[in-house]
Amino acid sequence: MTSKKPVNHSIVVASDPSAIVGISRRILSSLKANKFSQEDIFAVHLALEEAFINSIKHGNKMDPTKEVKIDYSVTLDKIEISVTDQGKGFQPDAVPDPRFGDNLYKAGGRGLFLMRSYMNEIKFNESGNSLRMVKYKGKSSLAEIQTPPQS
Amino acid sequence: MAAIKPKISVQYTENATVITFTTEKILEEKDIQSIQESIMSVIEQAERINLILDFSSVKFLSSAVLGLLIRVSKRIYERDSRLSLCSINPKIYEIFKITRLTKIFDIYPDIESAAEGLPQPG
Image (tube, rainbow over all chains, first blue to last red; front, side, top):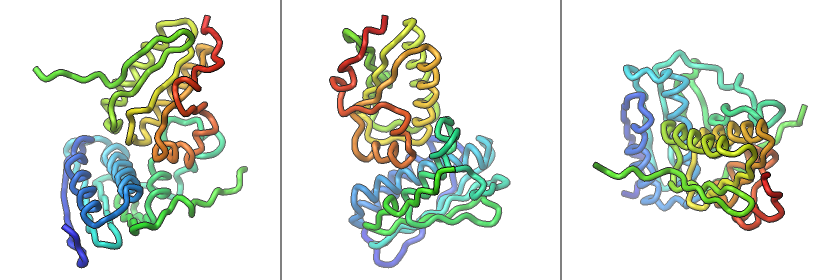
C-alpha cells in the first residue's frame, strides 16, 4: 500500500528475538510498496534488527515479562521507526566507537554504530530507552560517516 | 518431524577446510550460537587448520555475526592457524568495510583465491 499521508503503526512485542520477524516483514513490504530501493530496504532492515536486539538484550535484559514497543510510519519519501523498551536506559554517547583501538577486536559493540551508519537520523530520548530513527528514500548515510581522527 | 536444516556445511580440500554458511539470513542469537559451536568444533578437530568461511549464500546478517567471527578469529590465532573469509556479497561487505573489520580479516572474492598459496596446515 503506497502512502502520501503517513499511517502510523504501533506494535508491542515480548522480549523474544523471533518477535521481530513478522514486524520486519511488514515494514520491509511497506518499503517495497512505496518504491524504496533495495539499498534502502537493506539499511532499514539492518537498523531495525540491531535496534530490536539492543532493546531486548541490553534494555530489557532478556526479561520475558518486559516488552518492546515499535512504532513506524512509511510514506513515499521516508520511514520513521521508534523502538522503546522497558529498561532503565543508557547513554548512547558513552558507547565507544567500535572501529578503533582495542574496540576493533571486541566481539560486541557494533549495533549502535551500524544503526547510526545506515539510518539518516537517529535520536534517543533522555533516558536512552527509546529511540527514533529515520531513513529518507534514496539518501545514503554511509557516505556521510565521518572518520574520527585516530588516537 | 520437521527436518532441521544444518546452518553450515563443511568441505575438506587439499590445503583448507571450507565452511559454507547455508542460510541466507543469520540473525537469531540461538542460530549464531549453534553456528559458533559447529565452527569451533571443526577448529578443534585439527591441531592446525586453514579455515575458509564461505559467505556465498548469505544475504543478510546482524552485528552478532561479526562478534562470532571475532571469537572464531581469536581461537584460530590461539591455535596458530589461519582464517580467510570469501564470497561476501557487496551489501554485506559494506558492513565489514564501515566497521573496519576489513583491516583484521583476510577477505577474498571466492574459495579458489582464498585457498591459493595456503601452506599445508601440517
